[in-house]
Length: 58
Ligand SMILES: [Zn+2]
Image (cartoon, rainbow, N blue to C red; front, side):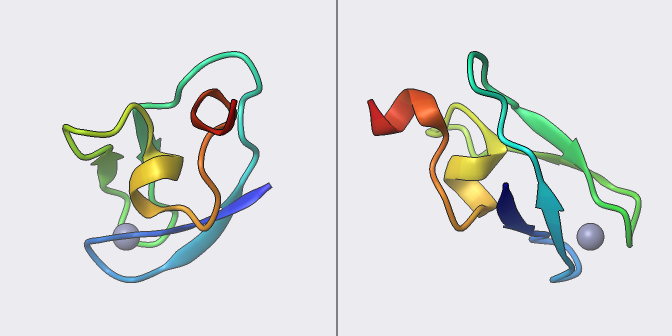
């Protein structure tokens, strides 16, 4: 699990990190916006999470 911080409203939510794919979008449960990863990052965990995705760790 990693904690994602919404860039729109600052809400923190826990999300499971997929082990074999990237997650380029997630839905914020507070502001209901679809949050996309920054363009230089492959997934939202790299952009807004407290942990990088497993593909970047390896
Ligand atoms: Zn939000």
